[in-house]
Length: 334
Image 1 (cartoon, rainbow, N blue to C red):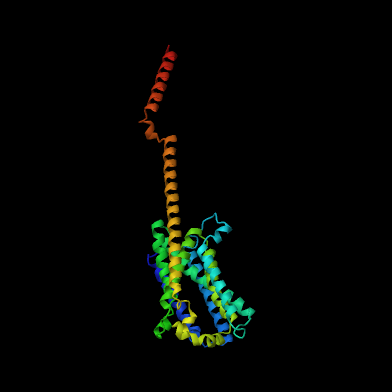
Image 2: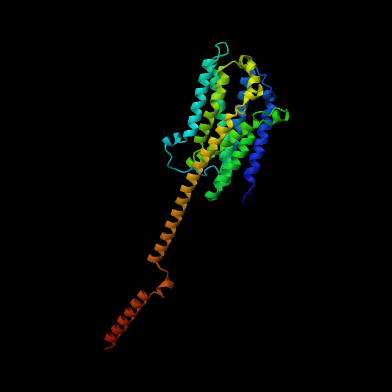
């Protein structure tokens, strides 16, 4: 029984809705920014476990519907991991920005929490696993499964659009706090499109997972390195000048430059997809032509019995054999 063409859309939207509702149910203070360090650590741990469980469920769905091995081709080299240059440049930029901020902050704002740093790394990895397997794994792969190269770019755009919507905090929007939400969504859309291109280019899920996790890690590392209560007190006098609210600091969308970064990822992903789809199309056409020629050559070397009856060469052979047989019979009779 063939699956409905709406299968990847429906399942993805259902998973998004269940996950979003569960997070806000289990961690109701996630939008209130009134965590104590202990509450924040516990909430992060809970969300990490939920994301890992969802990732395992999605992997099982992919194995059942056959999308798990889509694009999983041989020939990968470790050096290919470093070829998504823009992704690595942005990761280095974020780590550099964190280092610069830490150097500028007063010492009483900083803190050293090894457990918090490890938790930030694990949390980033769980985000990468969950979101990549949902959007670039389950949805993107299901949309291109069994189709030619023309389906790749539409699949990347649609899965990235849902990925962008997934990064909008609709609870905060309902509360009237929507500054920065569009910027966050567009940035996520661009990054998602770029990660879809990486998935299609290399076919290995762990590459977009690693890049995604390392893009997120500096943000959570910053939270682990500073006292959130004191940092808000320190920068509160500047909030009016920056036209940002305390809530905007929880996302990257409050920075107008985030739209430009999203556009850069979008363009880079488009170029990678265009080059890869063109190369795959030429490979497919060449392979089909070789198969056709092989079939024609095989037909020439091993003609069917019907062709024996209509081939002049074989008619001549049959005539000679008949003449020889007639002469042999004459000799016998004589």
